[in-house]
Image (cartoon, rainbow, N blue to C red):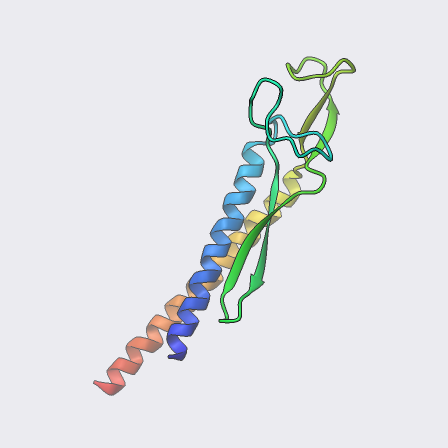
Length: 138
């Protein structure tokens, strides 16, 4: 039973790592997207186009020993930049862009990779233990 608990825990950790990486990749891919104004709950602009809202992945342990991964909005969701040539620039040349730091996203992606590798190693070890146990019993 302990081996299956370890595998479950590692699988949930690997899933959380995948979600962390996906969230970070989405933030990077939408770095230049139009973002919701700071403090706004708007999801679309006046033309009906979607506004990007960057997110962070937060992991927490579950009572069964696994990992639960949830997403939270970055606060504030946007920062203003001066870009008078942008089609969405206001009268002062300011645009709202997602509050995304490439440095933080790079770190999040490295953490997600290491988290995934560690959980995969746990699954491999549990598999080897299971095989060894079957050999002893068989």
